[in-house]
Length: 369
Ligand SMILES: [Mg+2]
Image (tube, rainbow, N blue to C red; front, side):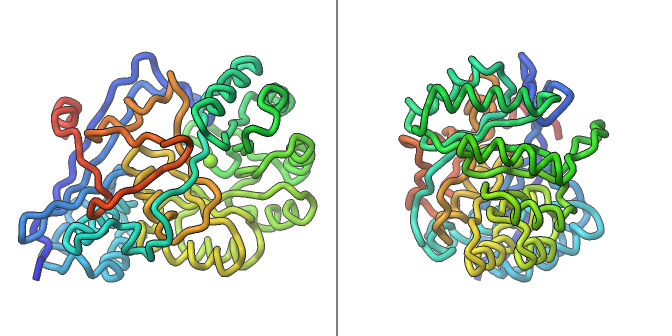
């Protein structure tokens, strides 16, 4: 029987020149940090994980060494306790799924149920452009084969955001479904701006309905469950959220209390694949859309795509992409081959695990520790 022999965690930093100015971050990003976790078994196979910084694992590796890597529910319990006391280490869950797939000779999407091997992507933009440039970006996405695009709000006055959205709708008509991310659920550490109130959110939601927006993401703070429920009652646009919700019981409450139409946890940031497959199934039983947030790195995009495809039926999955500022070269620098869309679809293959090869040379050149 294969046993876990060692766990290695390395940290890497890609300098961003020019810096990346993300709509949700008041500070231009000078670097893109990536952590890679590798789990080696007694037969020399290695499972990879990435997508979060793995703060909190140090000193706890012995809880996994000597265990059967396939005891994923046991490992999930230990990781959830490490998260409670120290920090999020969910890429280790991803590495254990990758290793389990390699042991069993199956891709992760098939181990999860094998519903399908692909999910339609939406191009998830990250930069606040003026209305004309937003319309140009949307045109490029439509020409590249995408069927949907997500637009960010955060220009200071939401009326300016609406003008950008109007310019996009006017240019592309109904060739693209449009999602809007209001990013009110959380803030960066230095950003003390208050989230919208319910009345703010209702006012903006009515504009989004007029422009036939597919979903309104994070219109309120993540803790405002009552507000989300009331918003959902008052407007027709789908309400999406949950990208930074940390506990599975919080998702249970968001779902059971009728707060969301679209549930968006990220398996690199909460619960791993082992925890989130429960949420995916619960969302389906409630007739909701389960479609993860994926804005970490290309490994996180792939892992979330395996989860979504394997359990199935999401209309779209996030594909972080806004060149030139957010290119595949930046997003996927840890991987030997960038994860490209194929005519607007994210397509998985038959390679065991996640089927990811790392760019060892690049990782050596960008290594911090
Ligand atoms: Mg978001």
